[in-house]
Image 1 (cartoon, rainbow, N blue to C red):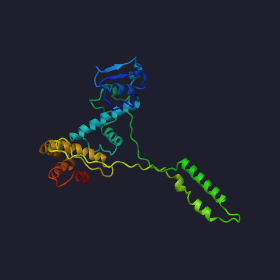
Image 2: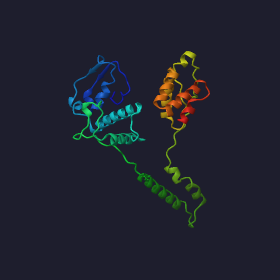
Image 3: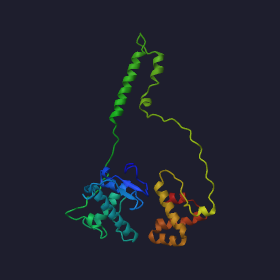
Length: 276
């Protein structure tokens, strides 16, 4: 299989053809499928230049951004993050942090290989908001012109000898409208088997399965976060409620208090998510 197809797999025995890999990312993907060095064999040879020619500029920038985000996370956790460091996007958050600390500031934990300086500056990835507009695709214009030609041809074909349109023409021309021709193809409806409910979990199993959240209107990120936090809180409610209050009373503290109502079945996790 290709390195692309192997992503996500774990192979106890992993023979690899690195000569067929084009980039250092492909080398990494192929080799990191291995469960152990003992179970890995490199067939033939490989081009060492692909893994010793330095990382690409985009990858170096990515690693540098992650280092700054790590520093921002640490400072925020320790309640030491300056109030001017804000942003709803990754780029704007990193940008405000660099404006506060200075563009030449490098966290002490950054590895020497990706540290930036005046001679090797870090790129500023800030993207300013731009007004957008929808532009009609050229293909749609071409299709509309084709529809007009079809309708015009039909009109000429079904005109009576005395120059008036026949009833037959009106019936046939109505079947071919722009909406019908330009609309996407409809897929065949395939009857699916009805879902079967699993057997209820017993008490021993219940404790091992995290309580989940019902999805609603693109709530995926909130659902995943609340599920993880609630699972942590369930290990030791009093201890975690205290930690949540210290870390962030407004949000985490609120969730810690509301988790108690979930434990008594007076509220559901979905209600806490919606409040958040």
